[in-house]
Length: 415
Ligand code: UGA
Image: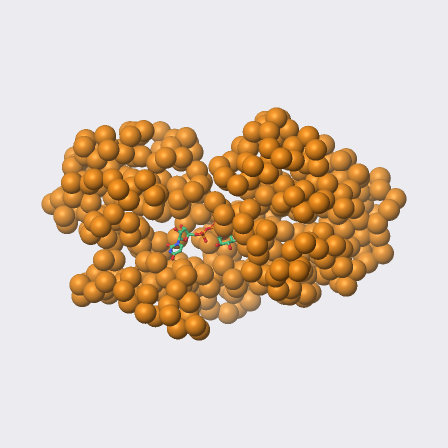
């Protein structure tokens, strides 16, 4: 099938290239000309290892990028894969996706055949319907007649995006029967090996939030138990290994540490928490999930301060800036509040990351960056290990160090 994918972030680009791999022809549309050129030249603009191989295989063949919305007219179906960031008050900011829906609607005015629009971005229940209104208004198409709307959330982890796409735990297809059948055609190869959940649009929207919020809840819960363990000199990983053996619990996402970051969990938990408030329901669990997560960065700085007897004027190394290993993404990384807190306490910050220095330089211009972690360790009074990059595992750290991820046998935030 011919498919257009609007948005060339890691979800959009992964979706486009994996759909090519599944035998579809994919056109990836993005407003950023640099990204478009780079994709068409076979250069991936993000760090996503397996995706690079797919780009090499499919670019200039069954994948191409463009900034021209009218390319949508060559396709049967459009996926919307645009960012839905948080506003400063935690509410979801829909301006990017609404603008795109408007442009898409205007473009579809020129199409005389039916078209399918599928939202992949994470949006609160009711949003896909609102986007549908924008598209019908702009296109003069009629919903259910020549315009079909669906919601198909993604469950892609950055750094594992291709594997998660090609070997999914589940596929959630939200929409009417005709829309779901269209999606089943696209995903034909995957349907044979995974479980299908066919729902209405709102249910599909909420499944994504419920999924991400539960994972974030597991992490904050593990951190709360981990904080108790630290005080009582108990190994929290030993505790969670046993707890996780209960098939009702599962061991995944019970690794305690400096907390969750990234472009998804913090924003999604905040958005669903705000939705509860909007519905006059009091968010209790989700509020605590965020509270615990906000305190972990302060806690790790406290622990280092205790160890080195004060941070004022101390040189502190930060090992790991990306929100997790395998990515150059620093969005909502817990390294950001850690660095802010170190600076607030007048420490001199020296940072290293194998992939994320360039991105972090856009946030902190006036800290020192080192390309060699060993050199960093040698030059500081103490350090914090914040991202569990494999290469830090064997790093000799003879300075006072607190780990935010269990990796190097140093004393940790929860162990
Ligand atoms: C997350 C979800 O895992 C995906 O299923 C989802 O599709 C995606 O958000 C999204 O909404 O687009 P991602 O943000 O790439 O994916 O990262 P995760 O691997 O889930 O990790 C999130 C954070 O939790 C990281 O900072 C990680 O270090 C932390 N974490 C994870 C822990 O602190 N402890 C754990 O046990 C697991």
